[in-house]
Length: 505
Ligand SMILES: [Zn+2]
Image (cartoon, rainbow, N blue to C red; front, top):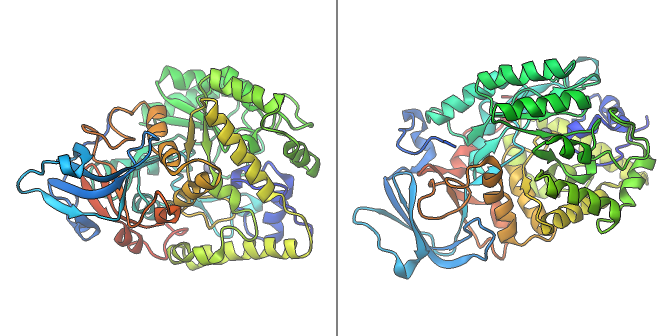
């Protein structure tokens, strides 16, 4: 059986790769501004998951990354008052009100609540759907808890398989009947003929695109995502209709190249350079080209300082198109990365079926590499990292997210933590990585006045890491308390509350 993953990618990118479909089949497994502010009382059943919901809380003696991208401040105090940040500054200057709960967090790090921009509320079903199609399974119970546990206090769903369920989850989270991030709910994937995810909508033309955007906007959806097989004229209509509804639209595109989409007015592009087909020698207007060894080599031959990529970056920056980094899902297509011994929490969170499924695919990758089949995953990952650095250096708005799809194993929340580490490996400073995951995303969402930074007057969304994030990026995996609108959720208990269930529900 011939298996070849030509390049790493979100599962959904995978389908563009004929080769990846072969992997799925041969393995018989699918490759796989306004916001609620405080003062909503959590449902009684959630109390065991809450570390503190005191009205006034002082976090003292912390190292603080404020989300702006500037260097961290040391020995800082942050005062939370009824769901808002009331003071941020040196501990020596802080006046702590009488009756405030004081948490001495010496040796620990505070970050703004993460704003995850590729945070599906589904996971790929173990075993897949019929006819080698992929079936997503809504993660109504686990995903919101795992995102919040990881410090993600705001999330865009970036492609929904069950928009009505996502909207219901959002309503429950807003009412604090369910723990989870504040959600920017995306409509159904706007796809075209050739779609491989059973739940994607095949948009038949511009009129259908307009009607679909209109229909879901009326039902509370606030973002849209176009997908790989969407036709240019349908995409253009979807962009116009979304903007007429004051909604933003992103895309994981294939039949339309990045520059073409930027010219059409798209707001955001997912995954970065590795999915941009405009440099594929086989590209034909309006058609998603196959990924072949030759097209991968053509991609790898690109130089981020060369005229092609420089031209692309210029187009994106001048059209104000944001790019969402999803490094964790790329890395996952390597046989050895991330190291298995770092996946303890992933193992304990996933259902037995989903974990087994993931191990099977990983071991298949391992067999291939031992058989001497070259893998381009890490080379491509490094190219993507270089592209993202260069895009950001030139003033591009870089966002980031988890994308819990692919081969499996990238789990809601944990994937964000890993992506943060990979951004640092890519050459961003810890403060820049935090900004990508907070203030940049807030700016994209137009919510920079309430979320994305730790500053006086902002919503009390922040997390306390048990460690020194400035010098040890791995401390991102150890949130202790995650505050959302002033309520301090216990990260470990949130994770434990859904142990063994991820992938299932
Ligand atoms: Zn995705």
